[in-house]
Length: 276
DNA sequence: CCCTGAACCTGACCGC
DNA sequence: TGCGGTCAGGTTCAGG
Image 1: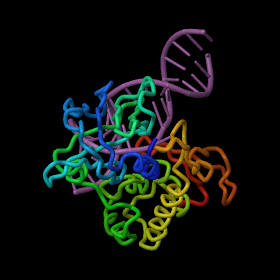
Image 2: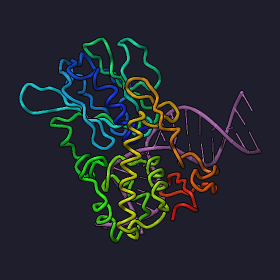
Image 3: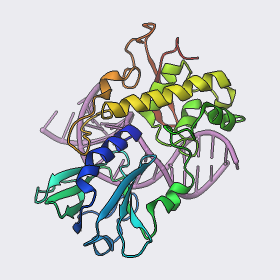
Image 4: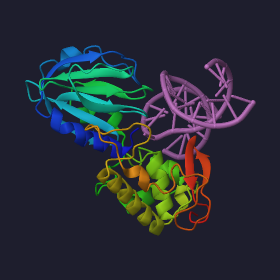
C-alpha cells in the first residue's frame, strides 16, 4: 500500500495510541515476512514501553525504553501490501494479521500484510543505526533534498528519470504513484535519461515532488484497494491523481490520451504531449 | 560504479 | 464456474 504519505499517515494515526504504552505481549502468527520475524521479539519487548515512533523513508522506527541509556527498538516496513492499525485487544485475527502487540491500554497494535513483503526487525541499538537505513538518500521534505542535489547526482546517469527519483539511494519515499504524478506536473517524459535534464527542469521537479508528497500527506494518503491509516480512515488523495491509473483517459491539461509504458517493470502513465 | 531483471507472495481481475 | 495469465503501492540481490 504504502508510499511515504501512506507510511506517514500510518505513523500519525497510531502514534497517540502507542506513546508511553507498555507492551504486555507480542503474538507472532506468521514469521516469514521479507526477513524472518525474530523469535525473541516477545521476550525482548514484554513489559517495555514505547518512547517514540519515527519514520525514515518508508520505514517506521519504534523506540523502546531500556534500563540503561542505550536505545533499542523495532524497524518496520509495510512492503507492498502491509498495514499497521490499532484494534481493541481481543479482536479476532483475520487471515493475514501476522503480528499483534498487546498494549497496556487494552488496545492492540496489529500488523497485517497479505503479500508479506514487509518486515519487522529487532534492533539492539537505536533503529536509526540499522544497516538497512545507512545507504538511504535524503528525506524529500527536508532541506537536505534540493534541486541542486538532484541535478548534481544525476550527471552522467543514463537511467530513466523515473527510475532515478524512485531510487532510495537518491531520495527516499518516492514510489510509483507519486513518481508518475511528479513527472507529469513537471512536464518531463518519464523515460528521459536523468543525466540529460537541465538544472531548471530539476528545480521544477524538486518542487513538484515536495508538493505532491505534502498534499498527499495532508489528505491522508492515497487509498487503493483497502489502505486505511492507523485511525481506520481511508486516504482521500486518489481523487487528486492526474495520471496514475488513468491510462487511456484524457490529459487534464491538453486532453490528449494518456499512454502507459513499462519502466523497470513498473506501470508508467504519462501524457505524450505535455511530457518531453 | 551503473544498470537491468529476478525474486519474494497473495489476491483481484480479465478473457476464454 | 474454473483456469491460466497478468497485474498490484517495494526493495534487495545477482549478474552483466
